[in-house]
Length: 421
Image (cartoon, rainbow, N blue to C red; front, side):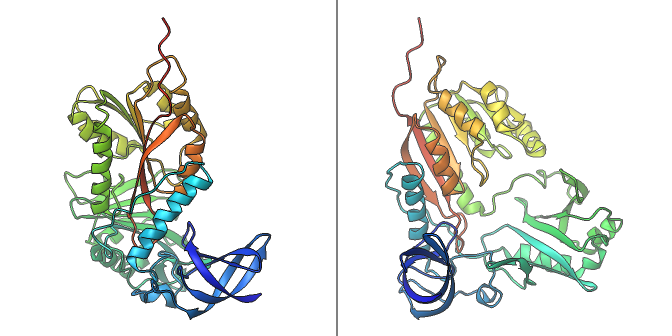
């Protein structure tokens, strides 16, 4: 069904939202204020649309500077066609809507903290790699056909050093595992400006050393064979460096702003004891420990946890475990920080944090939740009704995309129970 409709807002994921024929319609690559013609496929009260034409462009619509965005229908970015201020407002509203609709929390979300860089901010780029005949291509997937991969020539949101490393990798692609038709690779620019490459796939790689020699831009080479659950360090040119596979912030400038905000919020509660869950390499845990708190840093990645442990001062410790397993033993603590992946908190974690305000032991003074997914953030807050939202602050970690980071400061909704006599 083809129809004309006006786009009112942007949904989580980046699609424009409008109404037509009594349905809520989601149309990718549209902007609030656009009048568009689209083909709709209905599914009950909702419809998915394919944009045919922009009849009347919105004032916030801009020409996407990346040729892949329109020519190859690149799915890496969702909002390049929106002016940056409109991207920020869309993300702010997505968070506000998620908290209201899913968590039943009416919160006024403040403006998004902008990224100092709108372009070339990404220090990591993960690409699908496919063999075409005797050659390999590396690229991203089309937004409306996830099985289709196009050959990437450039990515203007990614640091040029990362893009250059990818070009060198493709030049040496004949030395990749020959028993695979499809691989997945990630180039990461580390804090010391060296480059690490992680390859996933293939069962045998006898040419790994030759590949490493052929791409001198790569300082550390990691490989996770097909069927393996862990990657392993194959070759490393560095003598004394942080672990290459440990978490490195994709946008380090916004990462630093977010870390500063977490530390400031934590220290406003003057905690003597802290649990930092999903702690990564322990950067926030280290800052709080050096300020005098006793910190338990929980992180599943064994390498990141070991690096965290090597830096934490006496009195603080790192635990390599799942948060749902380690959190009950790490409590009580005066402050808890959680920074989960996009899937959000495990139900056991939300249950433990909710129970921490109901038990006879000392309750946390505050909970700081760092989220990269407004929907799972809202779901988790709905599971923890005893925690009240004090403050929300979004950060534009990934300009040009629909992703947004959110820091939520929570405190007990009512005074904790008095300890029994």
